[in-house]
Length: 364
Image 1: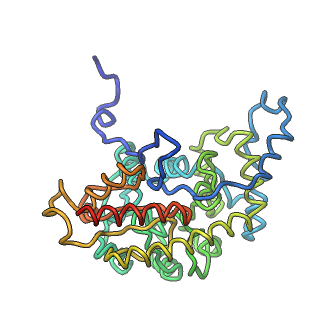
Image 2: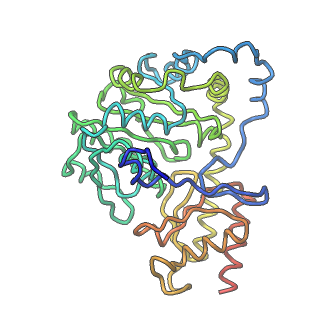
């Protein structure tokens, strides 16, 4: 069959999402969704729905949402922008600020969709190497780039950088654009200064966030941006005009207006994360210090087959957990081949993981 795709699209590798469960019995800990549902009271959004509103296009300016976050963060309406999930925002950033003209800097390990976007838009890409999965910001000045896209806390490691250090780096390079992806910020229990506080002071900084993780709304697709009015204005030029549905806007407004409910749930996830790491440490797992709703952990060496790219112990455990109806994430690339990424679920779900791991090592 003839392919009508552009040549570089035909040859590019598509982003691989985590496996979707085929049964309600499966414990899904592979895509970093929030372990807890939104409050029952969110149903009021649907109870008060006027069907006539669905005939019309949704508000383009999303003024209720923008005003809510602008006031909360002491910003102007022109310094806040919403998108159809953080992925649409990242894609728009590539179109507006990178394309095939600017050189992009990515950390060695980061959200893998960035690499797909870079291929899609034929961006010139450079890689900042990481040592022991850590990002050394002092090396940024040695790299060649115009735009740096940074996840903080990092995905897939969960390690968080100090915001003060990030601001210092951004100020040191005023001719370069820095985009900080804070998708997992709600699980950082040691966060100090907010980067959003610096948006007006540092006009080459964009902070992007999502309601998918900390607000349990991955299925609603809402992301947002804090940046200077000039950056936001140019970003809006390439966003789809009606990119956030009427229902999505209503649900997002409700969630952002009930922040304490979600933060309470996130504190439970943080507590479960700590407990789970302590338990697997007793099984000699090595776990990176996560500030996200997942952990990247390596099983004890010497307790499995000879570890090659095809037969790491991590991969063997990944397959065993799958046979026990538990989905976690395994990446075969580089150092990640010896690690598993596990979303932090409820205490009950994580206990199932512990029991399955104990069973695995008993069978070994």
